[in-house]
Length: 98
Length: 137
Image 1 (tube, chains in turn orange, blue):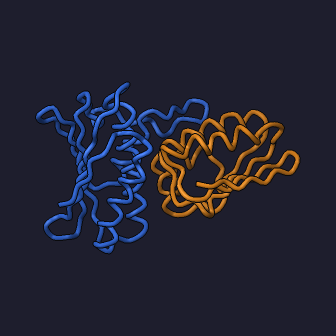
Image 2: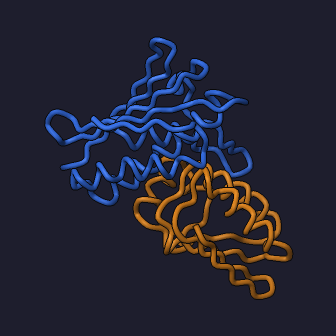
Image 3: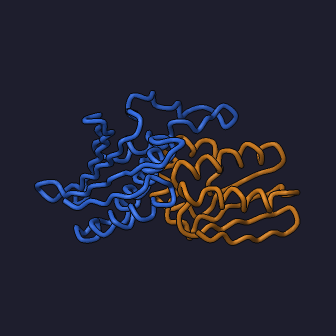
């Protein structure tokens, strides 16, 4: 997995490519931790993401919890197959997906 | 039937996925189904790697077979770790708010919801978890 990071003041856009799974979820988490300081508007772009497993959902949940306190977080370009996982797990109700 | 045996550690999950995907490609599995199966493998193999032999490292065997009518794929995960039936765990409450949500049990829940059949048995000191997924509609 590679993660593109685009930070502009209080805005941060993260674009993970490949898979967020058991092996790569810690890298995804680290990319957020390393860049989140001072961010109030977080966008995670899933356009080039193949899939996400529960290890990645854990990171999204933690991040959503902390962003809810200081600003906003949204996911964009979510594919049908990833959307299915969000539906099954109820994440569709706790995340902002555009 | 084809099988692969490797150390049950999370770094090996890619090898298992690659091994299964070869078979899925040979059977003409469509991309969405393949991704669902890949996620299921990640969840199950991670469980084995994290818990079966903890804190030691043991072996896991993954078998792949097509059903008799070639319409489904059957993937069997075998380990000799502590007996653990992931299917007896209660399904997580997926309607809680973000503050109340806990991630526990979500992995196997995704497997149950996306696969057509998930079966567990403990036999001859082995955990045997079998998933079946229809691949051709």
